[in-house]
Amino acid sequence: MNKITTQKHAIWQLIKPFWVSEEKWRAWSMLITIILLSLGSVYVEVLFNEWRRVFYDALQNKDYPVFKQQIWRFSYLALIFIVISIYRIYLTQQLQMHWRSWMTEKFIAKWLRHKTYYHTEQKQLVDNPDQRIAEDLNVLTQHTLSLTLGLLSSLVTLFSFISILWHISGPLSFTISQHVFTLPGYMVWFAFLYAALGSLLIGWIGNPLVKLDVNRERFEANFRFGLIRIRENNDAIALYNGEPREKQQLGKQFNDIRTNWWSIIQVTKRLNVTSSFYSQFAIIFPLLVASPRYFSGAIQMGGLMQIASAFGQVQGALSWFIGAFTDLASWKACVNRLAGFNAAIDLVHNQPRGIELTSEPNHPLVLRDLSIQLPNGQPLVDATNMTLTRGEHVLIVGASGCGKSTLLRAIATVWPYGSGEISCDTTQSILFLPQRSYIPIGTLRAALSYPQTDAYYSDVQLLKILENCCLPHLQPWLNTEANWSHRLSPGEQQRLAFARAILTDPDILFLDEATSALDDETEQLMYRLLIEELPQVTLVSIAHRNSVAKYHQTCWRFIRTENGTSRVVLEQLKM
Image 1 (spheres, rainbow, N blue to C red):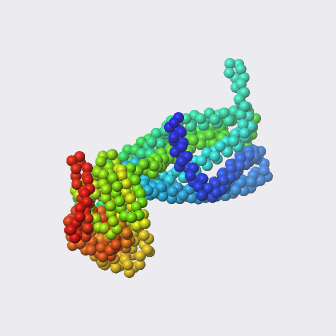
Image 2: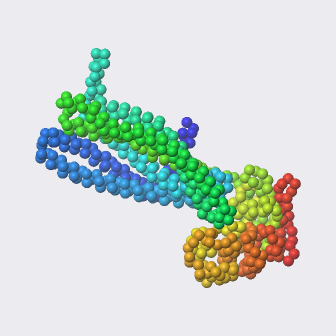
Image 3: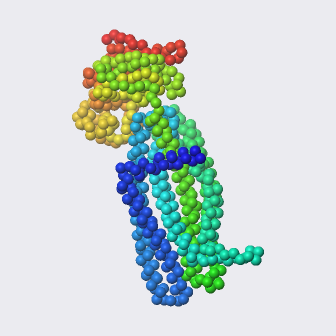
């Protein structure tokens, strides 16, 4: 019971927000209009049911005037039904896209807030978040509307036609052990029995589809991600001659898809066999059951066709579960994935921070008893107390893996594991340059201007900074769109990152091995240019070359301790 309650709560958390948001009036007005059109469609079906009785009686009686009248009546009823159906589908599609757009915007904002995308990836809380936002939200909104409106339409159809079927089918009398029994509205009971047996059978056969559909989405996403990884790392894979390994990996991922797909095919085949027999036999079943009254003369041809039509409507309404089972399985799998994604985001948002972040107006950065740990709780950096003054240039050095880059991630608030306090001057702008700079796909102008818009800087500024950063050969390509992270060498990408830093003009600049791909001469040039263009900047650098020490006044040296952690020692550098 607790698990069912939890699932209902998760579903409600996904569906409710849009309908109580700032868009609720527009959403509810569209939904109410769609419901009214659905009710109108059912009402027209009721009129069609009555039309069948009159029309077929006219055929049986060879009454041409009534026949001609009913042809015209059918024409305008069909026209009304077509108009209602068109606008019902049109408004449903509009509402579905409106709902999807709203949910996509909210999920993207929630995923990006507090660097959640980083933490969920680091802790491996959720797989393929891109698919959950791009595809699962589409499936959720589309199937929720179609299933809900379909269920509502089935209920209205059921209540509209059940009384009709009850009255026109009449009683059924039969004898058991010399006792006469009369079953009023017997066609209604046959419809309930027929639909109940079909629903139970379909539910039993199709139950594995929910898990198979979850696996299908996961395996498809993993396969696409593997293909994208080859595109992103084509240069390294080519140099390693790693094609056989990549082929093996992709083959394994696709084999997961194929194996799961064969399982889906087997279940779907059994479902199709059952549902096909069910739907085809439903055509003749009401005629077989009602035929004794027709041949006895109790009803005419029109009455028989009306009974068959009403039975079909009632049986179809009762069989909503059978017709919607595949969509229900897909919807349930989608809800499970989105609920897991939502829970992972909430877990990151609500996790307590071991490292306290405070404001320090007098210094750009103050570390008080700052200890850093790995996600599993293993200590990495011992308690550290350091103060950074305005305009100071600090070089961070130490062995690989001692926690230098992790310290910068803690300062950037993306590494919450540890204890102590980090105080920053919130009035000053901060920029971090990682070893591998992020370059968005688009024009070179947009890549240079990031994270600002591509119109933020003038052509003169951009062309000048390309010249100064030893990238004059890129000036003609300023407005060319490309995947620049693939077209530029690692050294060019790092020089472009320096150009971006100079354009941004931050108060505090952190460099995390941002010159590792540069030769010594170019590295010296970049540091000189940085200090000339940004004379007031507070600079913190992680570097392995001693040649850059002359551009810094102090050094934070990471020293390994006997217990495997690192302690930070402050040293003065000779200018």
